[in-house]
Image 1 (cartoon, one colour):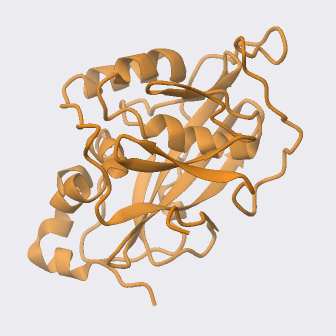
Image 2: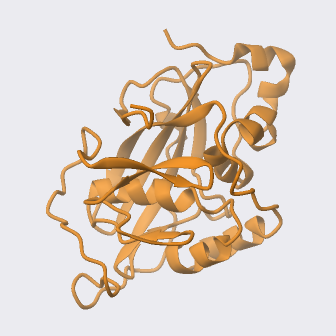
Length: 257
């Protein structure tokens, strides 16, 4: 049975907005970026549990400019992927590899992406549902570190939502590249919606104490690659929920396997 973090609720820590909770800020570098940039989103107190966390899904998709097309699917130079598999994924890529980003461990795939890595910019994702999943993980993981400005310039869909994000992010301190997850990891994902122009991905995180949390991001096909689309308030996430387990999610293979 999955254990929840009732101890934190008893101490009063769990009632705080999640980006202020010490456990979020200290336990996992890959959550730090999401937590700090979570805008006004907050968790319900009292140790409530959800099933799949779908209550955190966005009620409407963020606005963003139309996708730019041109050339071979509008791809940047040097980027080529096999985009034939348009099915909603039911398992991780068979060529799944975990790559370090600072002290974090992030899922990657030669087929789904990222196929090009240049510093903080991990790009060239497959124009598929699995490519959208990889982009949601790979892009969001970079924005807490120094160099986030280049990530925004190259991997965020331009528009007022991104402008709001920049204003929010500019007020936050950078995370040290040496700061990484101590008791948490990416556990799974679910594609909530998908079209060839936009996708909404829910990511599942697991803590060593048995607690699970989910958060939802949107990516858009723009300029020949998946780009992150913030919410109107500048948050990159549409919602966060504590969930009771892994039901409804595709589970990653552990980076320790």
